Length: 324
Ligand SMILES: O=P(O)(O)OC[C@H]1O[C@](O)(COP(=O)(O)O)[C@@H](O)[C@@H]1O
Ligand SMILES: [Mg+2]
Ligand SMILES: [Mg+2]
Image: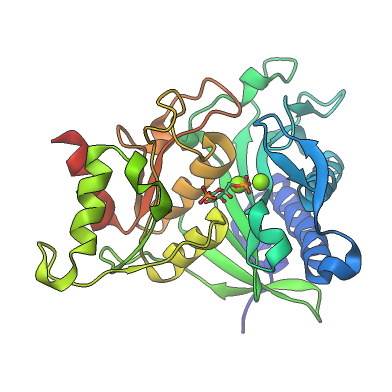
């Protein structure tokens, strides 16, 4: 019989982590319910404000952000949080000794909210270095330090995908029962794939290694690869990576020539790092064109990085093009 999330956590985590993941799961159910109501719940549309990255915030970006901040502050195990939607970290006042720091992208794929396409929440759990006051610097730990990472995708089903650094498991929300039920004991990314994900509209801006790699995929059966490749681009990282974890593929958001000072679009701390831990734990690879993403020593809460992740043999091919 399938386990529910509570049973899984009971067997696979300690008491503190159990409390934290249970709280994330609970708040994600509330976000899922709000997403599900859509226009009927008044959650669609723009909030008329901008976040620290200069991006227009949607109502749901702010609603989800506030819900997660409230839920995690109340757990008793979180010392501080950082989010895509907050300029600086949010310490839990008077509790700088609690065990965890949590970073999150409350609502990933904002441009898809109003058009009823899959969106999600991404989270990364770090140990509290416990050296006094929680500041932005407390969070600047490489991805290898993550104690847990995961996401919830609000799609045709609401799925929770989790890793504690020992494989990847998935749960599906049973709305009637109001709980997550385990639906995968081990997500494994096949080494080879015939599917790639990249925003092709940026092609003219790419650097030579990415140009060369995508060109060889587009040549198809009669080209050097000897097989046809298919392309998918949902524009919600959470949904694109969920597909890669489910059936393989390579997902890329490279750095490009538009603004050479801007190393890609995706954010290291709450998008690239948690997704990279999940992908590696599922047998895939993840790199930023120069190194393994999980090894990057962060210097800023909101720093960006190039992302190339997924089926190991494809990511290796792109990596080789960058190093030869
Ligand atoms: O619109 P583009 O340039 O294809 O970018 C899509 C990417 O931007 C993102 O939406 C950024 O996430 P947010 O919605 O959290 O800002 C990724 O999820 C996605 O992969
Ligand atoms: Mg995002
Ligand atoms: Mg977001």
